[in-house]
Image 1 (spheres, helix red, strand yellow):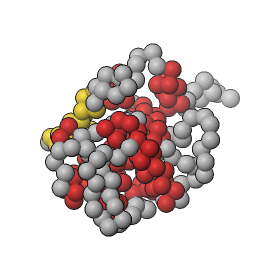
Image 2 (image 1 turned 90 degrees about the vertical axis):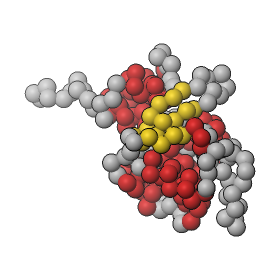
Image 3 (image 1 turned 60 degrees about the vertical axis):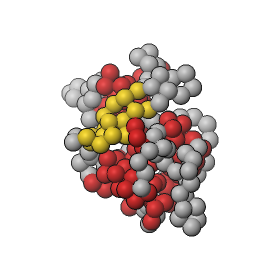
Length: 202
């Protein structure tokens, strides 16, 4: 299951549904599900997901308004997360359920949980975020190993295939306009769109 070198596998909506079906019960399961769905929805790096704060995720009628703080010289960004069509994989519902169960109103959005079900008071580390995503993907029986970056890549590709504009996707992901990584994801998403071999009368 080791990913090795190279790009992280981009998660797909079907894989998110598989992970949801295999999530653990209890408070840890609610946190893990909210974490990976939020990571996907904000196209977040593991460090950004770890740095999210509960008071900077604001519920509005359409979904959530989210603030990602500045990290490692990258500017902060603000954007919205809509309710998902599928309640089982909706990041808004998952976040609200976890927040209510954990009684979180401020401070870190995602906290460690002891084996006895007690919440820690410090934010999860970026490494813990990566491990939570990888562990739940393995539990779900996915054929590829997912990492923290899988959620980021998956959001960009999924959003593009849904017809979203590049500038709106970058607004969510925080990529620079000339980012080679971003345009690599766009090329992957567009690979089968109006392909040169399509409908050529062969």
